[in-house]
Image (cartoon, rainbow, N blue to C red):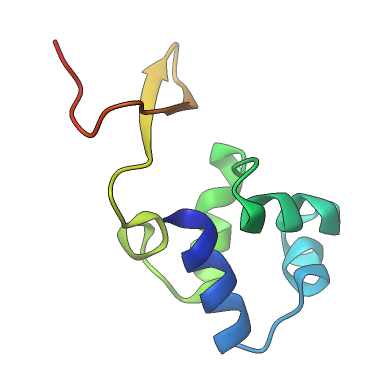
Length: 88
């Protein structure tokens, strides 16, 4: 999922967590949390993160749909899925 893809891409590019954090203007501990899977970046940082890692959104977030996006009042929130398919 996202956490594993982020860490693998960062290591492949030989970037430190601090270097990515500096580019995003956030604390290094946030990157550590992303890589542990305990939090996700704010929606505004996702495009920048993809740019830094030279990855598409799909490449960065691909796996078994661990998270879905819910658009509410023009803000993106991450919602963990308990099931692989959303029921209507």
